[in-house]
Image (cartoon, rainbow, N blue to C red; front, side):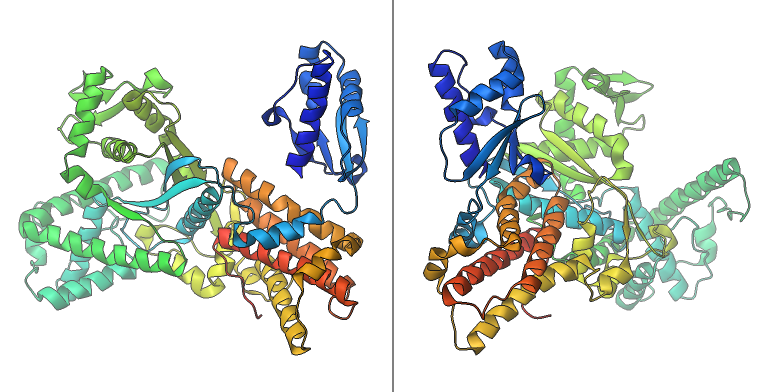
Length: 592
């Protein structure tokens, strides 16, 4: 519909240009928007306001000239000018009749665009493999996966990637935590580090080590404690300053414990580390699989570092002239590209920072031929965005190579998140409580840049108050309608229904057809703005329109021509519900 109205405006400006009163405009320059108030028509354009200055005419006068030059259209009932020069289109009752046939012809492709947009690599979730995924990770997973679906529907060649942070200190802490639990299983009276990982998942790895290795990894508690500093207890009541100092000492103890473990175990510590990481990665994969999230590639930080990619990146940066020495460390001059301060690449002890590894990973992604990188991070990484963009610009000269979307936090009615405490709500727990469909829909019911409070009780309810139930019930209702048709020995005649499409003029039918026609626009906007929650909102509106229609009108027990027209409309609604739910990764049940 927007294309049709845009074409009318292009023809009108071409007519004015032929008269020498205005330059013609291209279709891409015409802005057509749906009105929010029916009193202002169905669609509105601000083209007169846009062209007025160049035409040296008042917007209102130009709007009158454009409207006067508009060709006739079987879709447009009348055109009015409002305010300073907005052109409002009022459509004829049958203007949206064609959308039903369009949907039935396109099927699952309705709402998709075929023009190729380019190759985009979307990296999301990438939770550290040091514990189970929690409900915060679930929001990033639902958002990233659904956004990939939406981008693909808009012509992007999309690849999904998970970056495994398996080369840093957190993995060493996991290994030390598992070993300490192993020693406790061996009967050694060792104290568990205050800053270690305390979840049951660590105990499970320790028990596997005990079963596989017996006493081979056992060291006496006395020998272990030699040369280790103290691991102070955090008092219940302590000042903020005292807590910070105690936490620092606890971290120092943890670092010393890791070094002690390496000294006592040698290469066996790396085996413990590999086992613990493998356990957690297997759990993460299983959780994501249950959540319906799948990746094209899992990229290991360890393998990246081992391949020499970090050194290659550092050499390239040095050659660019943006690296300098200060206090024994090597710094990247990211301030040249908008960062608030320069960043350390190589520390004074010669070790690479996490930033260096991450930068090498992003360069690796670009060198694999992707025109655009899209990273989805938690909101707590907001301070990392500017430095990464600056570094990539220093490497490539491109400002547009990296896009980052930040996902805000999630809260539940109860439960705290924090891997080390072991007291957090896992995504698996949430899926067991609410189910995959409800979890994904609820995660996507609000913009990713807004805080989300997840109502588990509502997600579990089978009522119209539950949005995912309400939407899925609309689909199931149509399936039930078609079963009833078959039970009566009847069938839908699409051609006959299309010949009677002009009878679909009830207010609820008009509303449904108008809402159906909006779907491609919603999908396009969701991709452009990186906002799949628009699909969730649209689904709720479509389901609401359908339930109103279903409750207000008979569909089967009417004359056959009208029956088939109404059935065509219902099947079109069913198709769009299914298409939109698929973009969110939510099922479309036939029975509820």
